[in-house]
Structure formats: structure tokens, C-alpha cells
Length: 152
Image 1 (cartoon, one colour):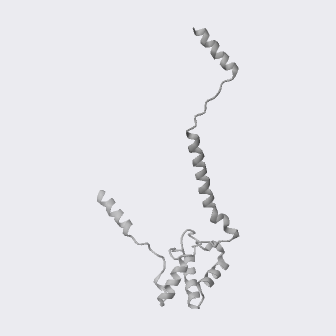
Image 2 (spheres, rainbow, N blue to C red; image 1 turned 180 degrees about the vertical axis):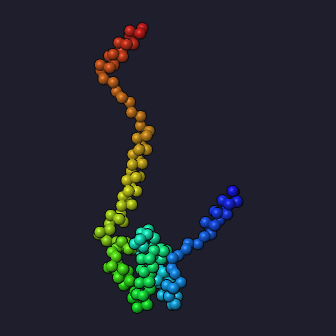
Image 3 (cartoon, rainbow, N blue to C red; image 1 turned 60 degrees about the horizontal axis):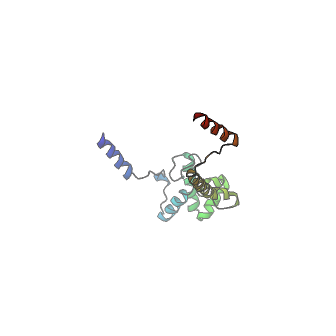
């Protein structure tokens, strides 16, 4: 069992990621193919949603990969291709959304949450060392004194 675990561990370490680009999609021009791969790695698969179209096996991802390659062979620049895809599918298709007023919350919320967490941690750390003692009212003090006198 131990050998099997070690073998499985080694297989996971040295396994290369399987990309979903099919051989029939690959362009003959290596420069264009590299650009296509770069663009495809920055576009979100609308079916898988947390995968690029370069790594997705979904039919829509294949269609988008083919579209990117068609636009490249037609002579479009990378920005023109991104604009074309965003016009049709919305900005959600970008794995890294553009900075804008409508995405400020998306970009700055992690920083706000981190700072709030640090603030809460500091407040809890300070309050952890403080021991609170409850004070007794005058009536309670008198009752305790009477009880002590009665014990004597």
C-alpha cells in the first residue's frame, strides 16, 4: 500500500496538465498558434466558468478556440479579438476583467476584507488579555458583610 501511495504521489507531481486543444485546431504558423494559445488562456469557458477555453473540453470552448484562430488568420490584433468576444459574450468571458468603475468592488473587495480581518484579529487579541471584573452594588456588598459577620 505504501508503494502504491508513493507511486501515485510521483505520478501527480510529474503529470503535465492536459490541454483541450485538439490537433485539428492547431494552426500551421507557430507564431499565430502561440498567440492563439495566449488569447485562449485569458478567455473563460462559459460552460466550466473557472477554466480557460484553452483547457476546457466543452463544445462551446472548442467553438471559441476555433473563432480565435479564424480571427487571427484574418489578421485581427489580440485586442480586436478580445473586443469581438467581449461584444458577443460580455465581460464575464475575460478571466481577468478590465479595471473600470463597474469593477472597482471586484478589484478592491479582497483588500477591504483582508484589512477588516486584520482589524478584527487585533481587537480580539487586545481583548483576550483584558480580564473583566464585575463590580457589586452597595446592597450586595452589605449583604456579603452581614453574611461574613454572621459566620464569625
